[in-house]
Length: 265
Image (cartoon, rainbow, N blue to C red; front, side, top):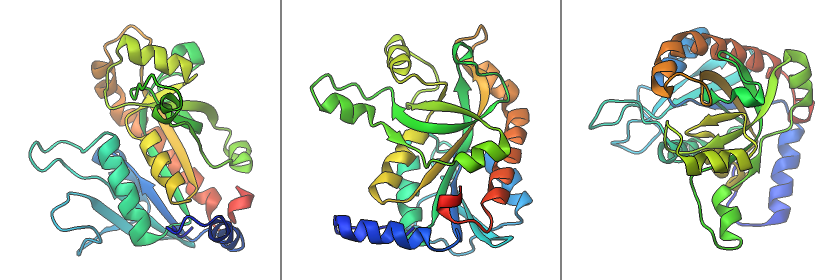
């Protein structure tokens, strides 16, 4: 679905109507970590851009190619130029989502990645959740209306047929820029009624909503936030195995999407 910038409700409705009258063609998959991205790059036989679509100097990486009847673009924010670690968090996620929409005008965005899960909400290691909506838990602005802006609740694209076909779990996502969880974050996450917690999703949702591109979230649980093991230790212990579960789910979703119109999802 192509972005627009004139603020016109009529123009927005026309864009949505046009996208729903043709099969999904171009998909952008936003993935924060190289470990999560590369198995899918290999699965879909994608190639890295030889000449970047993005501004000179940014570390963002695009892998692209055709799979079945879909033009697939996996966007990874790359390594931090100074520290050499994956560029995780809401700021890189927002920037690459915006730049990808502008450059590629996708019909659909998929934000795929690992996440912490809450056993109190039924999450287990290796579960893959289809997210119903996303909100922030670390933007606390205790002023009327600004408080709602801080939470930034946004819904994912409704995909009842996809859900029934793949039998995925469904849960709400809460996003913040820290891997650990402070008492204040915990209170906000509880208020958000979240089953999974990540560092990118709500930021992707914000940009996708601004530019009117539908978005799906797939989050695989690497660690139990309300469990007994330290989060960082459990995350690293389970990352490889859970990434395999995530990649399988993404592949199944892409296979389901192929040849379909948005309302058929």
